[in-house]
Amino acid sequence: MPPTFLYYALLTLCMLLVVGLTWSALRRPNRQRLVLRLLAGVLTGAGLWFTAFPPYRSVPSSSYETILLTENFQPDTVRALLRRLGPATRLWRTHAVAGADTVTVANILQIREQQPSLRRLHVVGKGLPVADLTLLGPVRLVPHAPATRAGFRTANWASRVELGQPLEVAGYFDNLPSKAGDNAPTWIHLRAVGAPRDSVRLTSGRGAFRLSYVPKAAGLAVYKLIARRGGQILTTEPVPVEVVPTRALRLLLLASTPSFEFKFLKNQLGTRQHAVALRVGISRGLTQTEFLNQSTHDISRLTPALLARYDAVIADVGTLATLSGGEVQHLTSALRTGGPGLIVLADAAPLPRLTPARAAFSIVPVATAASAKPQPVLWPGAPGRTTATVPATLRPSARLRPIITTGQGQAVVASQRLGAGTMVVSVLPETFRWALQNDSLTYNAYWSRLLTAVARPEPVTAAWRVTTAWPRPNTPVEVQLTAASFPVTAPTVQGAGPQPIRLAMRQDTRLSEWSTGQFWPDSTGWHRVTLAEKTAHSFYVFGGQNWLGPETELRQQAAQAWIADPSASVAASPILTRQAWPAAWFFGLFLLGAGFLWLEEKL
Picture 1 (cartoon, rainbow, N blue to C red):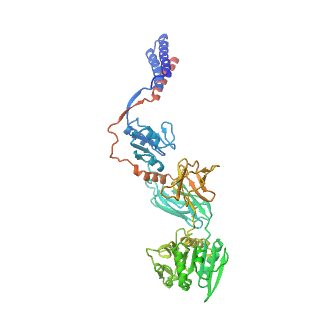
Picture 2 (picture 1 turned 120 degrees about the horizontal axis):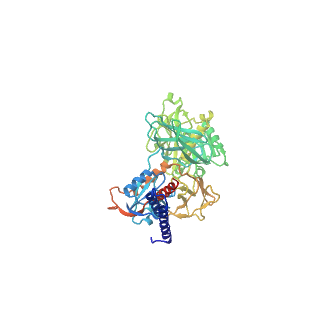
Picture 3 (picture 1 turned 120 degrees about the vertical axis):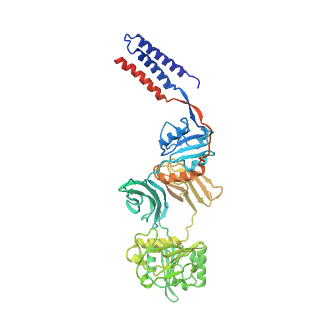
């Protein structure tokens, strides 16, 4: 850089300062410490000059490699890299890293523009976001991840559950090695609505976990996952969930004879606002019908028009045995083409000969003495300990999926896909006893699980999905719309701010039903993306310190394709770069000289 006016002005000032201090020292009558005063004067002027214009030195560096600082980086790692690559190696930092001694970059393209010959990028800390990896081009990554800390390594749960269905949270917790003599286990708690709802004990202090809870109210909720050891909370993470109201189903109940099982089931389903039609055989050729939450119509025979009105059919084996061949054919055809699902309430006898998919369900009777005694029955999300009489079990096969099992793992309720539909067989004949015992929670959970397994899928005109894992503020979040056609009006995203954000959608070139949009949230908490006030979807934006472990794992896995080969060399020898000496050193010399002159004057 050519000298400027400031350069000459400061040089003149410093020379005049040295001359003035020298002249003042020579004119003093007291000749003691004259040499020290002269030396201090020169030191003061030189220190001031070199503070503004420090000299340069040649230091090794690499134009092929650089260092990027990301969240949670370790300073010791940076110092070790500078010793290996050279002290003049350039340092960059992301916007999430505080500090003024390095240059902030918005993305990787900015680094590549400044260093065109860059071949290796040393990433210190949490790592690069997945969206930035595609900007690397020919640049390879050398990750330097921070040391492992106590926290959740992985975690998964359904962000949207139906009221009455269990929310299951599963993952892996990693704790630091315990101190000598400290063998306290780690407890993982799921806290909801102000109280712990489920917990698991990790004896070794780390390991996999699975927790469940059945939400009691619809709406947006943020539960908490807490890790505790020896009375001390190790970490707390949010578990956001959207609990949607129970879907109102259209259900056809067919009973061969009057029974408490169908009576209680009809009343309970009607109370939960399902549209219910019940047909009960009174005597040969005589039936009785009841309708709840819908108008009356003919249900004396199973026809394609009748089956098209309903989402599921619940029938006992006595009814299936009396169906005509045409009715069985209509029922089987409806099952295979995605019509109503079928729940069969069986007993210890084999299924009737014309039952759809009869060969897949083989019933094994239980000894009379054992069947009279209630046994534990289990299913995911069951509310507490549940018992029921078990007259028979279902023989396992590759085609059956157990839904409810005994304590020994034997299936008592199982399902099988039949074309586009689902069929369920249950050998639990007296579930109404749960309702008689005022255990409506177990009764509702049981039937909700069966109906969810077989109900006709609800037609969906459009659906939203957030494709970005662990959305965070000030980072790009991508949402995907699946619809029959490209949206005419732009969708909007409503966050904590008063004004919604309009999304610019881009149609996928591979699948025309997919459209994606991207936006940058500026706040944490719940957000809602809406299309023309019809199709809406809620999602949660996590804080910067939430779920760091799973996000770090995700970044490391995604970066594997860009990891540099450790055996490859990018430069034969380091490059010498001119670097200024630290100005603080020379300012210290200025203070030393000026301080000596002031102190010597007082002596």
